[in-house]
Image (cartoon, rainbow, N blue to C red; front, side, top):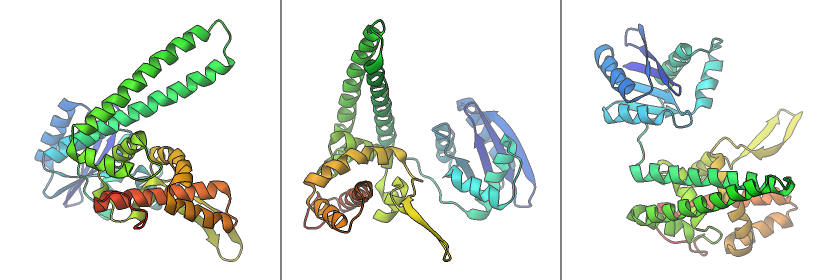
Amino acid sequence: MTAIGIDVAKHTLAVDAVLPDGKRRQKHCANSAAGHAELLRWIGRHAVAPVAIGLEATGGYQEAVAIALHEAGHAVSVLNPSRVAAYGQSQLRRAKTDPTDAALIADFVRTQTPPVWTPPPPEMRQLQALVRRLDALLDMQTQELNRLELAAPIVRPSITAVLAQLDTQIAAVKRQIADHIDQHPTLRTQRDLVQSIPGIGATTAAIVLGELLDVARFTSARQLAAFTGLVPRLRQSGTSVRGRGALAKLGSSRLRKALYFPALTALRCNPPLVRFAARLRAAGKPKMLIVAAVMRKLVHQIFGVLRSGRSFDPARA
């Protein structure tokens, strides 16, 4: 097997290939359509089948090259950078350059056999782009509203004009999200299933679908909760270390952010979660722990309706 590691940057790709005889080959190319075609030709000339390719998730810069490699028939793994970094620490790697990072990724692929990545359908990727754009616009709106509170009179007209434009763009993107979901039967069905959960509205349902991409890649509700970062991290060792538990927060911060206010609503209108929160209060649990626990239960309910294909039923929940 040939194991290939690719260190992805905004404009360049550093490539390291480990051949079956242990020899290595390196390559640099552009992170562009022309560079991807050059990389495919290089792999065809130098790699020995079967080929396993790994690259880290780097904020979206990896997506185009991963899709190009997948469409060319190669087995591609999109890796969590934290896993690769921990592997490097276990190997006592000290140098950190683009070539050494590519070599580290190649060794990780060769020794750890990570799962093969399959790109989500185009409509899912488009939905993700739309909900992330909406999130960015809402963040900008919050920033401008905060500035308006303390702004000097001379700059208030400028801030007000920006807020008006943001209001227009937010409304437009929300319409675009709704139209996009309505045009795709699978997305429309999934949105309706998620919205059937008390406490979750149209915007949150769209964010959930856009960030999950494909619920079938999760085998259990607990795995989905871990992806969301809503599982506890314990700190205990021997008889002396008894740290307070806290959320792991190793997963999608966007999903955690999207589920916070729906959890507050669910505390009032989602019958199973109302009873669940009451039990936690009776046990003396603090407010924020209860909210986090309800967020996790919402994730379980989302997993349940999407995997079963049935609308939310309080009795089943």
